[in-house]
Length: 182
Image 1 (cartoon, rainbow, N blue to C red):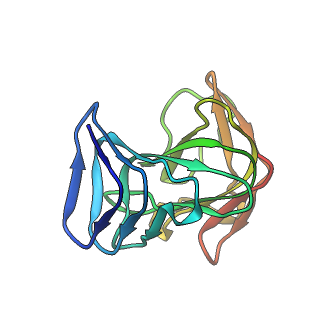
Image 2: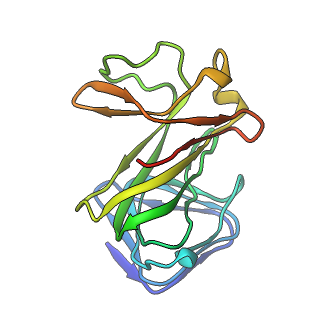
Image 3: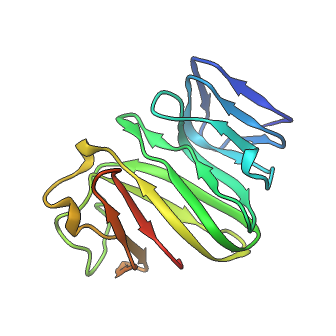
């Protein structure tokens, strides 16, 4: 495990091994390259600038845990080997850590009430410690993730093998789903 003040990634690939943690107490700058592996990246900085940069050529392909707080937009620059799939969290009530992991392919676990026609991507989003009690989620995906009628999509929370639909606003132009008040 490694703890750093700041990390500026300008290219290449940084792999975090299974069961390992890379903690960054300052700023992660994503200016090229990617962070992958089966470990965990933790950003302890509860400010919006805890992650700077990121995009279709520079993103995180492992579990990302970052501290969030009210009054800011917190971007989770995540994706999978087949592409960038960012999550943004805004209008936050409470302060705490949010964990996000983007997953490739349609969700295949047990989930009663989950529609058969679904996006070829899903996110595991958790609120360890429960410090965040409400937020708006914006989930980004690629055109290649779409199967069927994109305008009919919606976000679902899966808990205990049961899928519950969330209020969802789908933007087919920007390939995003907004779920307010989660």
